[in-house]
Image (cartoon, rainbow, N blue to C red; front, side, top):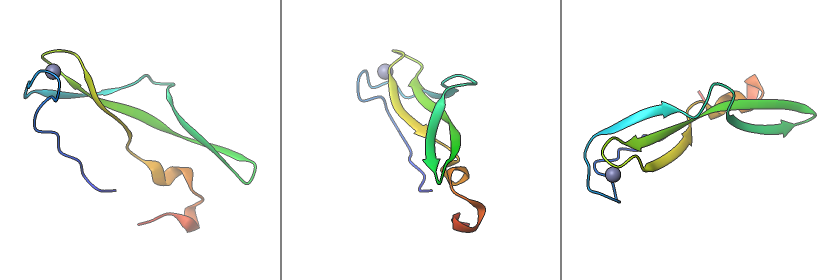
Length: 71
Ligand SMILES: [Zn+2]
């Protein structure tokens, strides 16, 4: 996956971002050939104003069967 760098908060200009997990059960799911797979969801939050600047999945490849995964 491509790496995204957020230098500053688009809402308040704050420069300190923290990475949080949405929740231990939150995530995205996909139904591939009858098998439900899921990946955890994370967010980048501005420490100054609390805005969620980005929501993303870290390990999307786990949604795919092993032989279809990108290395
Ligand atoms: Zn902010």
